Amino acid sequence: MSNPSAPLRIGGAAWLDADAGVAERRDLFMVDGVIAPDDGREAPTLDASGLTALFGLWDCHAHVGSLMYDPGASGYFESASQRTIRAGENMREAATMGVTGIRCLDETDDLDLSWARAYESGSTPGPRVRGAGRALRATGGHGTAFPRTYTRLDVMMICDGPDAMARAVRTQIERGAHWIKIMLTGGLYSPHETADGAQLTHAELASALEVANMRGIPVAAHCGGTRPAIDFSNLGGRSVEHGYMLGEEAADVLARNGTWLVPTIGVTHDQEYIAAEGWPVHAAERSRELMPIHAAALRACIDAGVPIALGADLNPIGPRLHREMEMLESLGLSRRWILHAASVGGRALNGFGPGSLPEPGAAADVILVDGDPLERLDVLRRPRFVVTHGRLVAADGQICWPER
Ligand SMILES: [Zn+2]
Image 1 (tube, rainbow, N blue to C red):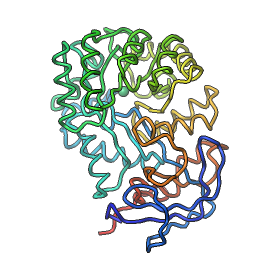
Image 2: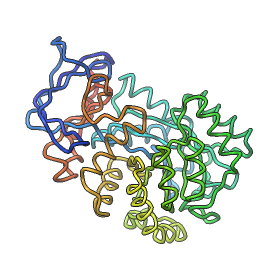
Image 3: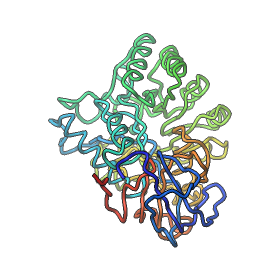
């Protein structure tokens, strides 16, 4: 099935509509990467009798090759090609775990964009990827004090002033970025910043958004604070990342403008992971302190009606995205809400439409699982079949290589 246009039929599954929360028998036909009306032509058929079908999961905040937090300094001498291979393996493992879409918000050397093209072409199996290439930050901005400056890799672009910002956005567009990622406020990791303090001037932010919006490229902002989030949203930004300290006022503005939130709740709630990964003391402390504030911000956004998609911001992608979903469940969110945000939400944020049903024309990124995810989210961890771009890419945890 290496031909991108090869048709595929899936019979016998019940489609789980994440909007309505009900499952009904629905046979699927797909060709050229999208769901299509079944015209009866010859096509390989997957027998999915008894399985539940649904749109696959999206990790909307990934850094696919990131070694942050890297206490062993294993990335210090790593080359771009080594990192690219690791990133590809990370994404492929995620696909076997039902992650059919990944939005990568900051990577070196456009490796996310290269993998996106390879997976889409069908030359190698993998998820659908939407990437930002390198993130844009100001001198001294978020990301300055990540654990190490690697010797061979340049992860972010540094831009000071509106002109530099405009040039950087245009450079990223020229390189094929699907998204622009900006570091608008501080975050957890760097000692010299706060999680809500703005790091771009209004003129810099406006410049980035004007150029990106003019070109129809959505902008995602690392943003922990209310004022910066309001500015970003009012200037036409598409998604606020983390939103650690968003208050009700920000939630209302985001909801009114249709600006998304990707909460990445694990970076403040998964203290076990943070301890195991060896985060620096100040970062672990800040994460702990922000935990209840971050949860309240998420709740305010849900109550206000802000559209929400999920992202883990941690590696490896597959296990961490499932953990993110578990943590949201432990915060009291319903499995249906979580499933909707993870699948339909991710698709909508990335421009694949808001639909929760496999209508003709819908991107054919589908998983088939044993059991009902609305009863137990963990049935999503090991799908029987995973389809991306309309091609079977994994079955029972194993990658399905294209026939040559
Ligand atoms: Zn991130």
